[in-house]
Every structure is written in C-alpha cells, then in structure tokens.
Image (cartoon, rainbow, N blue to C red; front, top):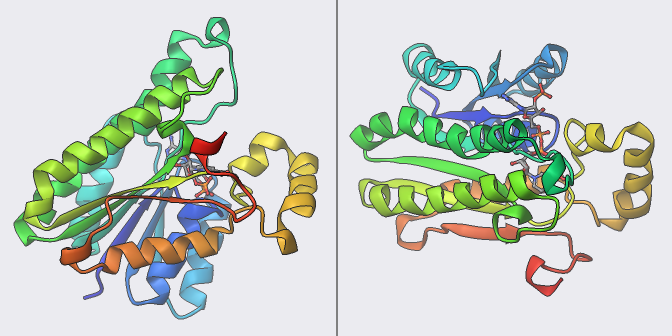
Length: 254
Ligand SMILES: NC(=O)c1ccc[n+]([C@@H]2O[C@H](COP(=O)([O-])OP(=O)(O)OC[C@H]3O[C@@H](n4cnc5c(N)ncnc54)[C@H](OP(=O)(O)O)[C@@H]3O)[C@@H](O)[C@H]2O)c1
C-alpha cells in the first residue's frame, strides 16, 4: 500500500505541486481544495496521467467537521496518512485596523490557526499509534513580522508558528515530525496571488520578476524542499526553515 500524502489547500501553486511531487516518488496524494472542482480534477488527472496516484476532494476548511471527516475517510478508504501538508493561508491584503472587521480577524484565525489545530487533532492519534508521521505547514513572512495592515494575517500566522512548536514539543518523541516552512516572498501561484492581483497585474509580475528572472518562487521547486523534509532522518529533523528568491532580501533585513 502506498503511503498517503494529504494536502489541505491544493491549488495550482504550492499545494498542487507538493501533491504532484509526492505522487511522483510513490505516495498516493490526496488533494483538497475549497471550490474549484475543474482545477482540482485537472491536477488529479495530470498526476494520474503521469504515472502517479492521486485523488481529490472539495473541502471547505472553515465548515464544521470538514477536516475531521476527510481525515477519517482517507484513513478508512485510502490508507494510513504518512504526511499532511497544511497549506491554507489567511492573506486578505492590507487593511487598516478600522477596516479589519471582527469577522475578518476571526476568519484569519479560523483558517490559519484553528484549521491547523483541527488537522493535528485529527491526524495525530493515528500517527502516534504508528510511531511516525510528518506534518508540513506552509507559512508566510507574517508569521514572524507584523506589518501595518496585516492585523488578522500576522496574528493568525504567528499563532500557527507557535502551534507548530508546541506540537513538536509534545509529539516529536513519538516520531511525528512537524515543520514550519516560512515562504518569505511571492510565489508563482495563479490560484492565490494570481487571483488577488488579477490577471493583468499577475502577468506583469511574472514578466518583470518571474519566468527567467527567477524572482518569483516556483512552486515545483518549493515542492522539492517539502519532499526533502519529509524524508529527513530523525537524527537531523528540520523544524523551521525559510525560502525566498535569490533576489529578495530576507524578512529580517527590511
Ligand atoms: N502565493 C504566495 O505568494 C505566498 C507567499 C507567501 C506564503 N504563501 C503561503 O502559501 C500557502 C498557499 O500556497 P499557494 O499560494 O501556492 O496556493 P495554492 O496551493 O495554489 O492554493 C491554495 C488553495 O487553498 C484553497 N483554499 C482556500 N481557502 C480554503 C478553505 N477554506 N478550505 C479549503 N481550501 C481552501 C484554495 O482553493 P480554491 O481555489 O478551490 O478556493 C486554493 O486554491 C499559504 O499558507 C500562504 O500563506 C503564499
């Protein structure tokens, strides 16, 4: 039976590329995303058509029991979950405090922090009983730097980083490896950054910083790091790392 890699938040950027990478090396990847069924089917069909093994499900992470039920169904119907990639972000763009409603603030926490907590609650017991498992958490600059206008995003991502640390503190000795992967810059991600900017600005960004300039992080390259972390020997686990394009200053330099 193939080990299972469950990706929560699989668009055409990091999530879908990580799923494709794990499938390419022998995992069965389970892709979950909120709304774009055509996009989901395209990614799943691409993986299966390229000799990999994948399935896909629509899942809205903010709905009660959506994550819990999907985890249980994957364990029961597909196989033991070896790796979970928690890839949901909570970026809503810059908003001053007065324009950040209570609802918007809480939504950031529900997606980025509580979503990871629910995921961990669901997958950890089975991983613990098997004595192994990997939880890879995509993160952002907002987890370590609170910029003006990022009240909801920074609070939610900062909380998520701390949750990764406390999960590690409790479960690393049980063989569960939690890694907080700080993506410190813009990703060539059409389903998230692309939608936030709109087609014209995204194309302009690709032409000026992406493509041959290598100034936009390529999700297929990010996926290689995820796979590497999931294969690390337990004597050398990474718990936190950051990634950025060569032409970007690290978060602590600006
Ligand atoms: N993109 C960037 O420039 C960038 C920069 C720094 C950090 N990050 C981090 O990277 C991660 C996202 O990766 P990505 O940008 O490459 O995106 P991606 O993997 O291409 O797509 C993420 C997917 O998450 C899904 N999603 C959103 N809300 C959801 C919900 N409530 N329930 C289930 N699925 C939901 C969306 O699905 P639908 O499209 O179907 O709605 C979206 O396609 C986040 O953790 C973010 O903080 C991204």
